[in-house]
Image (cartoon, rainbow, N blue to C red):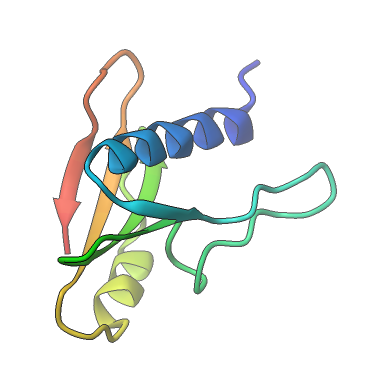
Length: 102
């Protein structure tokens, strides 16, 4: 049996590494524990990256895109200009993520 929580956390760490290579200072959501569920940043985002030119908010998924309700919440969340919102999906056996820009 696969530990889905650990698999998702590994993908979040992959995204963090990629964002840091792109020049972002990255803040991650707090990891969940055996008794506590992971708490996303502002209830939606797994990582937020800061750089002089822009801010990037990323929601990381494994094998599936988020639900329609989650996508609507992400699109309705108000941000100042210069903030990008993206969903990164990792599929099993594929190295590069699929990226959807909101």
